[in-house]
Image (cartoon, rainbow, N blue to C red):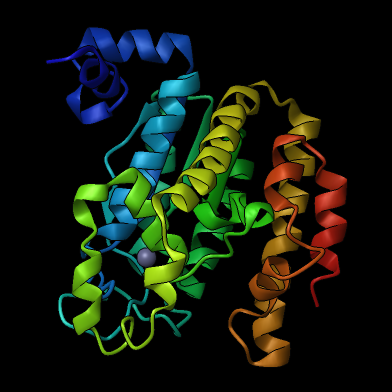
Length: 294
Ligand SMILES: [Zn+2]
């Protein structure tokens, strides 16, 4: 086993010996929980893309600044109605009997084990998935009195050009950098949806993926270090900002009928500063940005 592999395995929960776990926990008692699902991602991408991507990003962040990465969850809300997609719960339905209690239980367990903050990174971002993840994180922050961040990875990289897609230029680029062995660009030509023009072939690249990755990993690793230091006042400000964002999204659904109104407005133009504001703890600004989203 080479040194790089050793380093990587020593922060992955399921691959640690107890002494490695204790050492990592003592260094930084922060846990990353990557979320994804199994879902069709075109002929050019592997089916487990979302979990693989989120897990790799968390591992890279933990390698940089510490923390322990829990195994990824495969299972979420929505997913393209295509072969090989498992839809645990519906995209358009408020009912949520699986993901929410599952996340709550994880948070309780992590807090019981002594972790001082929790980062839930979802690589799958149907609208309801994003809402349930963020809503649960906010509620668990208040309930457990430790900061819990629930965020899709693209929201940490909107200001460098990634606004979240599905097997498109962004996700494919991320995979070309994170897991090149799982991308087969030549196969896209046989895909009537993703290969109907050369947009993805020309637009996706490992360089683009590296740029997004660098921003996301840098911000995650910074958050892992600062979140356990937040006092009660800071946690309350964080909750207010996150709740404002959640409200904007839910309200957008109600007011405009579009499930992605707030997210889309963040992606385009002046509202793309979420990731930067979060790591700089500019929660008042984040809150006022969220209030302007509708
Ligand atoms: Zn995806």
